[in-house]
Image (cartoon, rainbow, N blue to C red; front, side, top):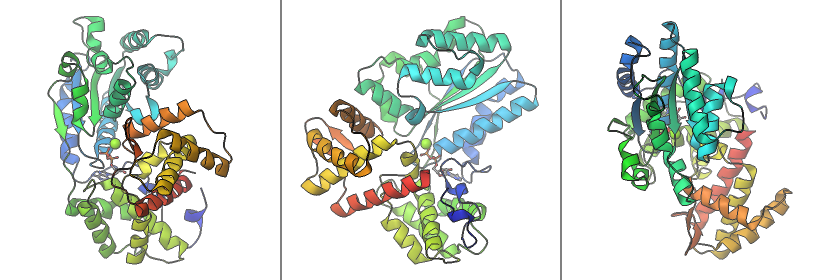
Length: 402
Ligand SMILES: Nc1ncnc2c1ncn2[C@@H]1O[C@H](COP(=O)(O)OP(=O)(O)O)[C@@H](O)[C@H]1O
Ligand SMILES: [Mg+2]
């Protein structure tokens, strides 16, 4: 904490209510989808232990509320189960943060769902078998979400590593042939359904046909969401309706990823921080405009929070290189030279060239940079001006992550 929210004069009551980690109790315009999920899992509540595993896909563009909808449903469902004496746990895995390989994914699932037995030294298959038999023996149940599964599948395919994750997790019942399942369901959350083309047909078919699509938010919906957040995060009177309308409109109509709620909340947070640094007791349009000029559309706080210091140093290296060369793409070698400059600047130990290549590839699976072997590294549609905004966003993200 940098003390900003603790000082006497601040527009914020609780600025963490604007952070990606905060999931409001009520999600305006997503309650219908949450009810759909509740309906899908209702029969388990009626006859716990006597249902088969249910596979559900949740799809929608960036910032359409996939993560928060799954989370809010999962936590409500877990509560309902516990109230009925059914020991169900909801486990939400963020693949970008917690699962870079099949092995790490299963280890993370095991650690979260059954910490008692999460010892090291098992193969992926053994970990799944251990999990299923542990749940059975202790009469526990699990509802699992795999968030940003498209990132993980792309990454695994890109490295030509062993796949089969979807296959494994959709067919857990085969481990105990014909018996009911203690893994009540798996939610696969993805932004871009095209990752399914990377799967072979038999694996793809195990995903089934239950898909919940989250549409983009329009300006009116964003206004409702922002108003609720303003009430939670700001002091009364600090943010006028005029400001909320302006931000909702900007987010609904922006060129890239229109309707992105994350972007709207980022602008609101940054505008509030600007108001504080001006010692103002309310947020003005000028604070919003300045926030906008410091926010690069391709990079959200959410993304920033999952990046390591080395990731950020590599990104900076790429941006320095793009700025210096003033070309749409730079080579990996050039990026490496500039990366070393960044390391010197920040007094960190540079990694090997091979590690840098790995990070660049990972950043491209995350959709932050474009990397094509023959062309090099670029940032889609970014002008020189955009690149310096990108750098400023990186700095702001780092300050917030502290
Ligand atoms: N209906 C909603 N009500 C309140 N906040 C929302 C709503 N939809 C999205 N958000 C917020 O917007 C941000 C982006 O939503 P998120 O679920 O991360 O989107 P996605 O996973 O689709 O990219 C999060 O901070 C989330 O809490
Ligand atoms: Mg998400």
